[in-house]
Image (cartoon, rainbow, N blue to C red):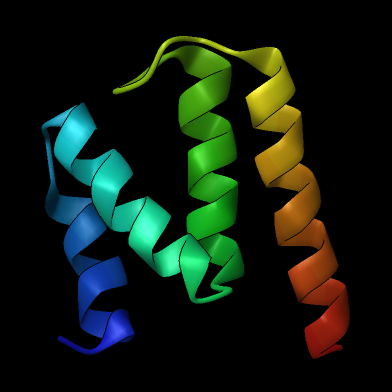
Length: 70
């Protein structure tokens, strides 16, 4: 499955745990939107235990990827 399709599929996923797995797979391939989504999920505790440290980690990694693309 192409990563674009996988990332697009995440938007339609209602089950938090399933979405987290898809976001992690996309983040492992350096997709900043997936990293940002993981940060958001950790910040609110959707599909994962709420964890501010992990949220900041994923937000930071997303920012680094965006800067790398610039």
